[in-house]
Length: 208
Ligand code: ADP
Ligand code: ZN
Image (cartoon, rainbow, N blue to C red; front, side, top):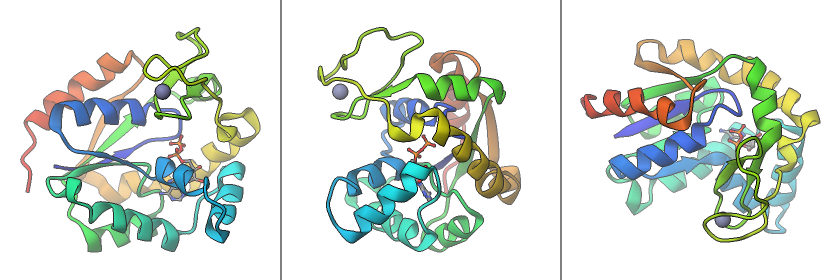
């Protein structure tokens, strides 16, 4: 099962991906996570990617496509995968068509007003990647591994606005690009409420 998760930043794609992985056994490929791992090194690529991420802009398509290609080639992807944060441009989507045939595109949707509030409240575990919302999780350490939670630099208000603009200009056109393949779900409710229709949809999906 090969799935694309589409949606603006802060629409809980990561949380949804983890639930799909748990039930359907396909790994989550988050390009954001892959890039966050890359910038920990001190290579020229790391420096370049770090600056782009801090501004909320997009890493160049060639770099991004190469990284996704390598990841998809790994053994755990042979029965499928969930792409979280990729493709983010039409050019990336066209490159993906050359690498793999996608079964479905899930569009995670929510009214714009809540996005900034949600993103500003997002806390991330730097150790295991678990995501929390400061709106409903009042602890400062990770439930799973006890590391101290952080606010990602790109979840700070200055950057959020730019990320939303980048989404509108570059990524939103993918909704039309994928047309009939798109299954739309609202993430206005709880993570469980968001997941329920997705689960039913995927259980009935015919996989190529
Ligand atoms: P979000 O929280 O918006 O989903 P991600 O964690 O997916 O953010 O990505 C963080 C940053 O990594 C992005 O702002 C961008 O700079 C870079 N990035 C992630 N995926 C892509 C992609 N497919 N193409 C270009 N840049 C990307
Ligand atoms: Zn943790």
